[in-house]
Length: 259
Picture 1 (cartoon, rainbow, N blue to C red):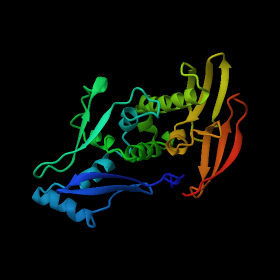
Picture 2: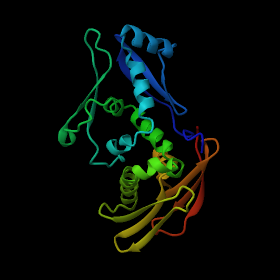
Picture 3: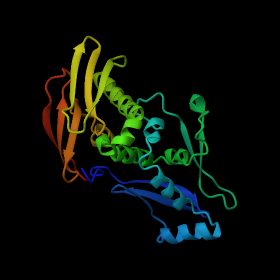
Picture 4: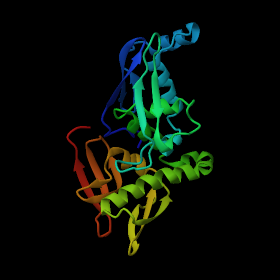
C-alpha cells in the first residue's frame, strides 16, 4: 500500500527552538515544523551563518533515519515491553541553547550511540516515536524490494518482527511464557498462527505485519489476533483474524470513526 500512513492519527511534540517553544507535527507520513514557514531558508541560514534551528535539525535527522532499522531495535516493542530503554525527554535551555537533550538512564545506559542524532529522535515522545517506528517499518514492508540490503539486515528485520509479534501474542493469550516459533514469510505469503503442542505456537508473518497491523494498534480486535489489515481510505478495514482457539483465519470488517 503506497499510502502506508492511512489510519495513523496526527502526532505532535514541542521543543525549544530559538528561545521559543515550537511544534513538530507528524501528518500523512511526513514530519513538519509547524512554526516555520520557510524551512529551506532556515536550513540555508544554518549552513551559511552557523545559526542553529532545532526544528530543522530534527527534520533532517528524521529524514536520515526514516529507514534506519536501529529505530525498531532500540524503541519499545509494546506497552508491556520490559526491555526498552527509559528515555527521558528534556528541552535544553540557556542562552542560545536550543535543541533536545535526551538522558538515557538505568541498565540500558552505556550504548555507544550517545553521539548519534537518533537518540534525540527516540526521545521526542508525544506519539512521534511511534510514528518514526511506523515510518521505518513501512520503508522495509517488503524486504524483497530491497533484496541485497535485506539480506545483510536479515537479523535486524527478524529481531524487530520477533520481539513485537511474540510480545503481542503472549499478551493476547495471557501466557507470558508461551513459546512462539516465529517464521518471517514473504510479503505476499499467507499469514498463519497455529498450535504446535502445549505451550507452543507457530506464527508465520511477513515483515509488513509491523506496518499493516502493529503500528496501527490493530494487533487484537474483538479478542481476535490480527494477521493482516487492508484499507483503501483509512476508515474501512478488512482484517484477517484468528481466535484464541487458533482456528482458521476469518475476515472481519472494521469501521473507524475517522481516518
